[in-house]
Length: 327
Image 1 (cartoon, helix red, strand yellow):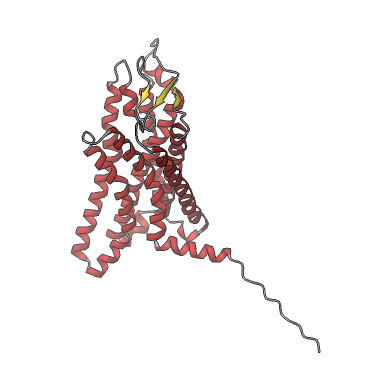
Image 2 (cartoon, helix red, strand yellow):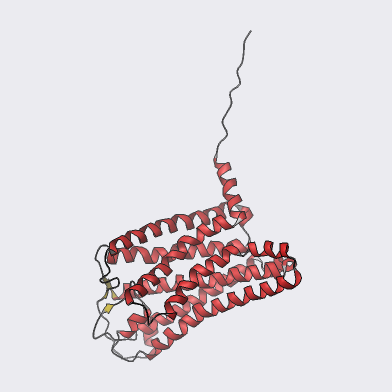
């Protein structure tokens, strides 16, 4: 961050507070039960995503481009929830709502990076389904291991760079008034609004970020499935179309779980109570990482069969001792 500041200007002094105060979930009755629920969601998320990652690592039959993307999604879910939920519980359940300035920016970086990568990973899986259904004969040529690794690495690089720019611009802000963040984590929008100097660059970032990281991926996913639907309607009979559609059910459920709460929140932002908005956004952050592994285990035949094979391997056959009769 010091390099970022020196590149934009020298001999400029910014007022950075020693800490921020996170004040979300204020005035909500019985809110501690919600924190216990978040803890339960976190535990299920950790166990589920670690199970999916372990199964993919152990079963060589799952070392395909599609499951590289599934592994990356499970990693994002695990890393993102681990970055968010323990700190949220520490802040609100144990009344430790003071967070150091640098820790707040670090908290923001990891939360935004993982949340954004979850969105782009759904794009990767949508592209995989698009090629598999529309160009089945060319799938092994178009979607190779190298291509999948390159696409995921490119998305990671773009997201990390974008979030670093957003965080770097926050370091150019002075905070001479309130240091209270009305959210459940170090939210970018809440932070730059607290600044007492010009925060127009951060405002521009806050406008562009949702468009690039959420709405463009959603548009691509919807267009890809619209194309799949139109193509199947023209060239496939009902049985073939249903069979192809079944391969998309898991991914469509992930898309719905991730994007529908965001659409509701941003559409009704001005009409819902701030506490309701905070709770809805917090659920949007922690719920998909918990449900994603459950959906993939239940909806994906390959993973279910892989789990059965691994369980069979883990069971040692009983040893039989032959009886020797001496006459």
